[in-house]
Length: 155
Image 1 (cartoon, rainbow, N blue to C red):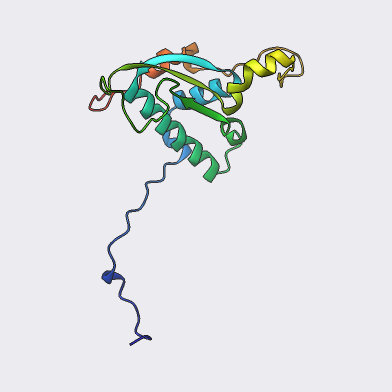
Image 2 (cartoon, rainbow, N blue to C red):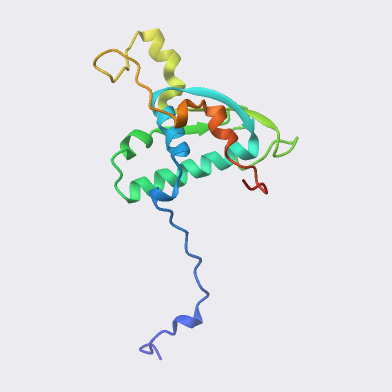
């Protein structure tokens, strides 16, 4: 009958996404995001570790957006990409542990050469000083990435 109540057990259970809170992320992922918001940098790491970093950055950014974090507008523009492997869903033929070159920066960092040719200044600091967010104990991106375990490893 059309007016019968629907039994919720008649439908398969929906898989719920696990929502992470901003507090559940360590300061290192935030430091990497803030670094990418200020300048473009290139680093080398295993393909699988770069993919894990991209996933963690996206999870943190999503949590910041959901919780209306005050730094969200700054980190919303940051992107990590692997220029030699444009499709991150397909691992390199040489395996997931292949060292790859990755870039972190703003989504518009690809246009830096054009901006430089035009002589346009994009410095947001009115004093003219380069601003760089503090990283965890002054570590470089390579040092920060070394703390992210590869799949199957535990610290």
